[in-house]
Amino acid sequence: MKRLFLTTAISLTATASFADTRTDVLANYADIAAATYGDSLTTAQALQVAVDALVADPSETNLIAARSAWLAARVPYQQSEVFRFGNPIVDDWEGGLNAWPLDEGLIDYVDASYGGATDENEAAALNVIANPTFTLSGKEIDATEITPDLLKNTLQEADGVEANVATGYHAIEFLLWGQDLNGNGPGAGNRPWTDYATGDACTNGNCDRRGAYLQAATQLLVSDLEWMTEQWADGGEARANVMADENAGISAMLTGMGSLSYGEQAGERMRLGLMLNDPEEEHDCFSDNTHNSHYYDGLGIQNVYLGSYTRIDGSTVSGPSLSALVAETDTGLDTEMRLKLAATMRELGEIKSTAEAGMAYDQMLEAGNAAGEELVMGGVNALIDQTRSIERVVTALGVDGIAFEGSDSLDNPGAVFE
View: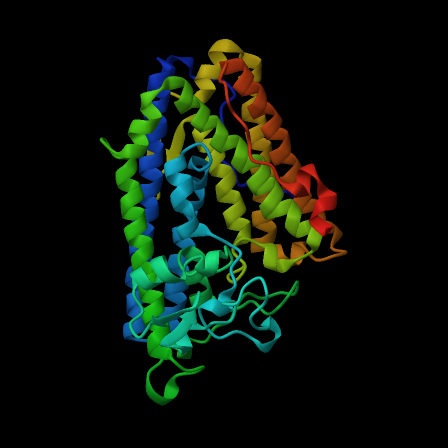
């Protein structure tokens, strides 16, 4: 198989002159976070414009444009996930934007093979779009008007069930693509544009309410990203928290890198789906965009270590970096860390390029697909390998109190099948 390396080449010589103090490194980290969330907001606003156009004038062209805007919005947002885990203000907020997997029957119609309510989730097939009133948690709910407040404060994690995802990127993704009913076969979701049509052209009923739900979810996405962007601006709470204590700030940076690299991405998002051979375990499962989600998650980790982020307009935010801090203590370790990050991006880049050439990520998960397994495990192993170097960086910088997120798929595989 020809290897297509998509990652940008990096210098193996650290710019130690950048590393004035740890405070400088933390200030640049906050600047990168502000830029990443700012780009996430900008692309979400573009998505909102496309969604409004689809609802106002339903057509195949406008549905494709809205899907394209959603895909573009994922690029900066996935790079922001490295700010989770070490920053509670991000971790407490993130579930409303990127929670998965979801029981999509809560939101809209689903195929008969999906099933109905279960003991674990009575609302799994509630279908809010088809039901302006319903009972939830023993209470009568008036959903005649579908609003951001209804989605956020009534439906999201209804009955305390995490699979009741009513908001965020994946709720919007489902409303744009519909279910992917192809299993491990080729093809993404194929929702018709007529699901948003008016009058007799409307398919699957409730097109006006479907449009209202899509607009409410997108409006909420924008407002949530506005709030988080403000938290990283000058005077924002997230920036202030990072800058308040050098040791705690550097710990937050490394915790985000290690936890995303190991337990979240290598484990829950990649190894688990491969163990189960389950296409429902792919992150962007309706749109078949998982290869990009994995790639940009990995890039976000590299951004933080190198202290550099390339914005959607092509400009760069860069400055004092963890890399330079490490190089001042151990040049060999910095070189090792840079090489490990580059190796991970090559492996994730190969998944990305293979998917773009025709083998979607859910096809890679199919039992017996040796080439697919090799691709996914290449990414998993590289992520695990770079985490071991991140652990060495923790020691080299003398940072205390760090515990990376784990995953049964990596730490206790037998538990996955219990």
